[in-house]
Image: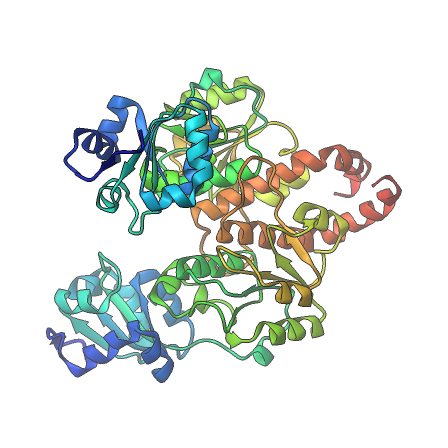
Length: 283
Length: 283
């Protein structure tokens, strides 16, 4: 397959792949582009995800392991010229590898047990969304849910910022915030809105034991946060405390602090609970 | 002053301000540009920092409060045409306000009491550096130190990402990593290297009480972290635990988790120490 090199950006196959840079075409074909060796490696590790792999001659030699992995999984590999790769890739300096992948999202009902989840509501910047996805994965989250008012997780910038995490954990897309919160609460999770104006302080919430069990965090828009109606559906708004003079934290940073503080509570609960009870009168 | 409108990008004054987009000129004049209403507001709040303020007629009306603040501080205000503002501004959609500021950094010796500090070593992306600065401010850090191998904090992207925090807390620039660590340790701080390969886990370090007193964190390069020699100078490398399948966290995210975990320890120490001692045999 890789013997022939595509050199024309007008080849129907190349044009078909290139269209996936646009959301409308992604939606229609339920496919998206994953660029660069890291994303391609993670995509290949997710069975049945990669539909086609495009590579330059140079990248083929440099990433022989990925080519072998593609062959082992019967993924068609297409060799393309540098010019064609530049046309397909969405980065300024393409790394010579690009996979056409099938959508990986699952339905809300298909997400299994949830102990820690992140919900993105009205998050608009794909870089932020991808970073939250990566951080949620690192913090051991069981799912990341993009509500219908959030950015497309298959946007190229989001895929890149997720650094492969899009392929690691269940991702749900296009569900309404009300439905998401109802579902999560039905599974026994406490749902907190991360909100700079929240009356409760994250550290106080952690010390109170409220983050010890199943927890889902809802993160809102970069500029204006979450609508009041959405916050009203949750178990309350919690803010990352600002100890200095900064006005606020950026979205991905606040999400990291909320998710990791929760992950720590969930893992130290067994040890800390008896202490907490012991010292309750003092608190 | 604001009666006359500068309409030519060839005016010596405008050319002089515009040059500050380049590091060499910033270094020579020890001045830099702060763009947009938020940065300008914070700069004006720092006495003696703003040297000149440039504004469009439209921004003048929209931000009358900032103009009054400038007048109250005897800061010369220059009205410029939209074309001139586009030339001066480094953003695609300039918000019509731009301040020429004097450098705000202080020497290492002039930083007062340090309870929490962030050190950036070989951090190269100005957006990351600015985000760490903003997060360190939010977490209540007493200083942020840019070593001589790190990006320029006065780079426009760093100033914007710091969201005003550059003007909030002492910033030190251009010191060698060895000198910084020596100084911090001499003040009684424990100095930890944030490193994905670190043998100690951040949460374990927190539980052990090592983050309860004076702490400084050293953050390294986005791609390759910190050199071994630098780590060897610290009290050890500590990693943010990865509970999921992600390979790593991005720099600003990892920094946020380290700084906030420390801030929480420092504030809950008084209450938690007796518990820790009480339950030490169990741990």
